Structures are given as structure tokens and as C-alpha cells.
Length: 170
Image (cartoon, rainbow, N blue to C red; front, side, top):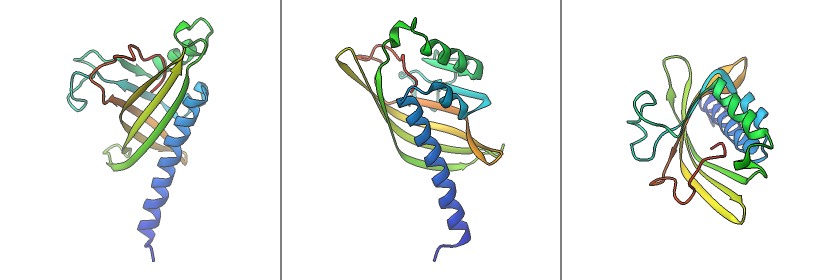
């Protein structure tokens, strides 16, 4: 029989898995305002360069593909929702696949460190691109709801060829 501690750990894992799956579904459905609602007001979203090990990359020292705070995330969503966003109008068809979710540990600030693997397929104009890599999240429990404080999307690619651009949210 599972102990109370085991049950709590399983429930926490379920909550994390539910949050990551919900995030993927919102992005697949282009429900970008709902996607934003999963993030805290002090959230950050990073896509480090592919020519530096993700653990060594620092947004203050290296040129990131994306280094957004909450305000920039909101601006990104606003741009992507407009018909004048030529890179994504008409919108790409996307499919996020999230797996290998691991709860790393609790951080000093009470947040959880969680990692996961991803594959994202984007189809547009008769071409399908694949992005793959790993996520590193910092999550916080805010009023009984898990929210994303920080997300780092480390691409497991040599570069952005043949994709050439990131016009979707990873």
C-alpha cells in the first residue's frame, strides 16, 4: 500500500503533468491568452542559443533566440494574434509533444524545478519543420494552482536550419 508521502508525490506529479499538457494544448490550439494565464506576473521565457551548452548559456552574456519577461511575452502574443503577423498568417499548424517529465527538486524560493523533453511539429505552406529539445521549468503553487515562473526551451539542434526561424511559441 502506498504511503501518504507516496500519494502526495503522485498527486504533485499529476498536477505538473496536467499543467504541461494544458500548456501544450493551448499552444497547439493557438489559445495564446490562455497560454499566458498559466504564467506568473514575474515570468520569463527563454530559448538559448544552440551553439552553447544550455547549462552554460547566460542571457546577460549570450545572444538568445528569445529572452522574454512577462511584458515581452504579452507583446509576443499580441503580435502573433494579429493578421499583420505575416510569419504566422495564416497560422501554422502545430503539435507539441511533451514527455519524460521529471521533478528535479524544490528550489530555495519554494518553487519546483521540473524538466521535460519535447518535440514540436510545425506545418505551413506545404512544409513541416521539427523542433526538439528539453524544457526546464520553475513552477510555483499560487493559491492552489501551479503556475509557470520560468521556462527555458533548449533546442537539441545544431542550428535553426532548415527551420530558419522561430515564429511559434515553443
